[in-house]
Length: 218
Image 1 (tube, rainbow, N blue to C red):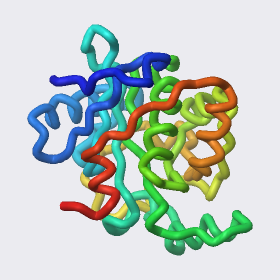
Image 2 (image 1 turned 180 degrees about the vertical axis):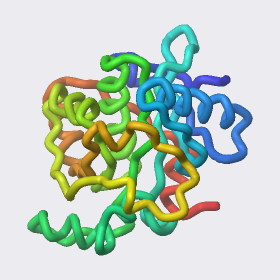
Image 3 (image 1 turned 90 degrees about the vertical axis):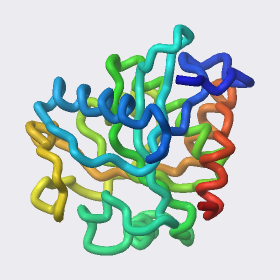
């Protein structure tokens, strides 16, 4: 797998992320990595993934972490199954400002072999999403993932419990995932990025192809 060259992101644990869309030659490999992590951790059998995957590699080229993305501008979000209203309205009820749907992105399929890799992935992702012009990120977080955000001192807001019975036409077998107390959360990307900058974290690059996707390109 080709790795995007390191630029100003040399302070991160990973090389720049590789965007893995549906036709990418390594799509099956990254899906298999995510599926293995969920199988080993929760006994889950994943049969569906978010449309855009980001793969994170170490200096040796080994795949260490991955996650999935979907922009709200692309259509309904998976996490909206847990809500009784559109995501932008749910967020707006908790924030003193207007929330625009095109500024929303959902993140899921979190997979990292080690807790340190998960925290490094969150730092890198925050900078990538900020550089892409997004403002709000939605995600379902288990207790373990919430701990990773807490360790990074990144503020998140809970929207409610994520319940397996709310899923419709989902082909995956989630095993013990919902026993891990998942909660639907959102975060202010700009605030998170500003905090990381104050903590002297170097800026992570924006994938040009992902930027084009966010702009509505095919």
